[in-house]
Image 1 (cartoon, rainbow, N blue to C red):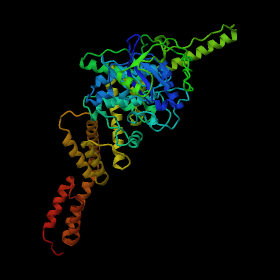
Image 2: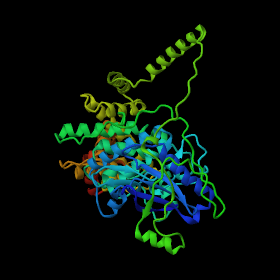
Image 3: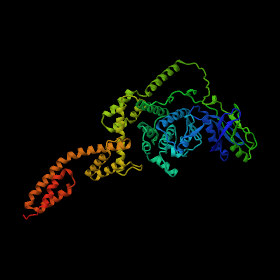
Image 4: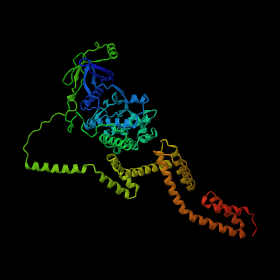
Length: 576
């Protein structure tokens, strides 16, 4: 859409970044509207983690605006330079971006292009969110028609990739993809073409980030997995909740390890220098209109103050070559003061006589509102725990699945509670159940596509054998457990797969043990009958011995009967 130049205010020496709409697009009404929408979007925002707008203007038909210059680099540049981020760094970045997104979402702004290139890492480690060029306001018709895919495909939410409606959950999904890329060094979905990546994003599950980096906490893996859910309703509910979970995770792990905790303002806390705004109000709109050549610029907001910006020598030379005025010519520039950002228009309240009926109605509405507020309060730790344990006592995995989100809420809100250990066990049971269902579907050829670990390949092969030959499948499971259960610590998907193999083997041992007694008794009875027939009908007896060898020759529990059959067949046949 345009070019960004490094610039300086020639009156104040203040550095800035000047974004200029591409000349080829400046005459297109749709692009001008989108560029103008970006300016109006930035006027709504004033936050330490969001790049601030200084002002906007036109010169010779070119549209531009000036914004805060952030010394440093983008996270995309850091990744391309080979940097790999520690999970603590990623969590701190996440907390800062959650504060920025909370501020934007509360004011009706969805970014729609959260990606490493739009996250600027200042030299002091401060992270800032930039480029609201495709942001869309809640409730506005917008400049992008439904069904149009706008954004960066590797970090795009599934609903956005499909051209569907987007919301705060879409930004959170993209932020989850950013977490994944910072930790793993690659986005969760990669491919050779855009359609291939879009198809993967909408139909397949990403590999767990723990496969690419070893020391990511299990809670961080869960957070990223929830953010990348294809159903927006299953993602973490808001930037505030996400920020608090990240902070709680850092606090809990710092408490466990004794490591110093990196301080960060609470995500839900009021922002310094930015008053809470409950009514967005009607911000003044800016309309840039096309005009005949040679006439003065029109249609801008009334100028509150003017400043002049000059671009670098390289840009000035380009401008001169294009036939424009001399470098440094002052532009028609409208300054946006800091006091004009993130403000609501005052509303006039007219005094009226309040009748008793109106007062009574107001009291009733207040009572209803208070009752609704009380019902909407988040449940206490005791209330959550009682609900979870009641479901667990039912002894059904389906009951545990029903309270899965309640377990996540408890662990996220009360990480220091002593009851968390038991809830982590419930959570592990749920994960094991889901993993087992995934293996069973793959064994039936109903799902798959993602790469498996070696132990997962072995477990899947054992399941396939179980469907054909229980004894053979049981032997495969026994070999798998003997191979991997060697006392060394394993974690993540490999640990869960080993636990599934142990459990399945135990179930088989119980089932087979109960059936072996009756089967062994039946084989011994057949052997006695064959021994009796050796004198009267040796041919029939030999057939029975051969049948025992064929059916039970590889069954360990029938070894004695098989030995007797071989000995009988080794003796010469005698005529009756």
